[in-house]
Length: 212
Image (cartoon, rainbow, N blue to C red; front, top):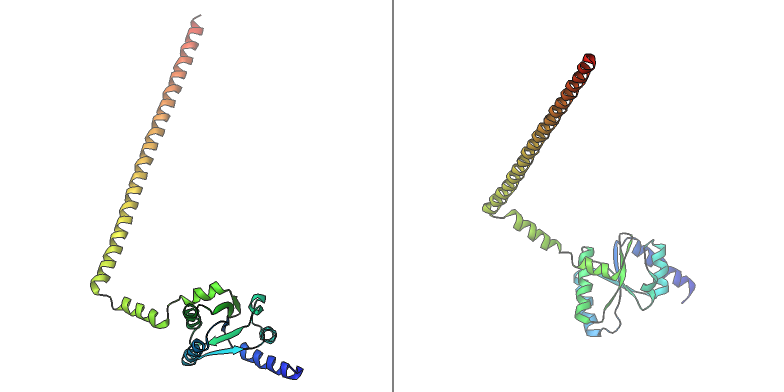
């Protein structure tokens, strides 16, 4: 490949990847042409783009676009896949086709400046879609009033239980303090009694001395 053509390809790739927030690197080796055609059709429907270039050019382009990568990505033929409405949808699409084909290999990717390991791509694919999340939120909002009342009742009961426990704890603490005060008072009285006994004893010894 002529140097000028190589530089132009790298420049075009770098410009393209510089505006991409999420990209997944895959290896399609071993996938039948029929299944590959089905995958491309689904990619078109979901506005997902795929770019296949020499690893050497891809590596340079990613570096110039300031996108993270790993040497393991460039060991075998690589396709860069990006687009879709969200990173989660992109990852779900590729993980689904990985399961369908049994051949597609996830090599990693990047998301907002961070390199993604293959297992992290799987984790992203497991995050529910926007429609699923909206459905859950809608279900929570349209819950029956009885359920809300039950929740509030449960909260109030828990609060009452906490207050009762706290009150009992304070009462117990106060009783223990009273007991401690009583003990201290008894000790003081015993000391006073001992002191009085000592004084009486000293007086008795003094009187006996005067008599002698």
